Length: 187
Image 1 (cartoon, rainbow, N blue to C red):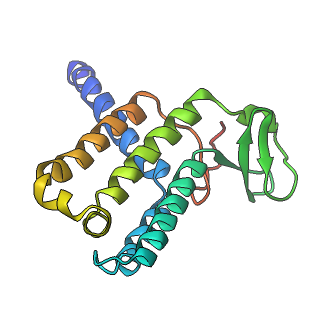
Image 2 (cartoon, one colour):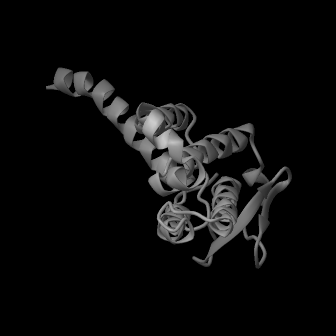
């Protein structure tokens, strides 16, 4: 029986890493930001029948949502001794809190190279999602939809797999806005 447990542990480890990687993808691509984009994009693009005003508004939406995706990679939180969750922005000196004062050593939440890598790949995933959205394609580059349909279908999953692999290889321990930490977590 001991042999069956040891033979299944590599599989458990691989599946655990895979699920952890997908969990990191979900954390790094904020669902609220994606929801806002998916909700407002058809309205702002007029379901792909754009005027100049529609193009400007859609460009602003994509830029703001992209900034929100990247910014979320530079936020973190912790649960204080009193049970309250404190959120802040990660800096080179540690966590800069939005409000209140820290009850833990905030210098342990320093900015890391991995934060920039995660922001870059989260931005790439959002760019693929937003720029290859059907309404966005019809609005900004309508001829692309008919001539390069294969690219529109294959590029988002390829970017997702590459980004998911990076997130799996370099997991993120940050708990940004909207993802409160468990009481046992520490950065």
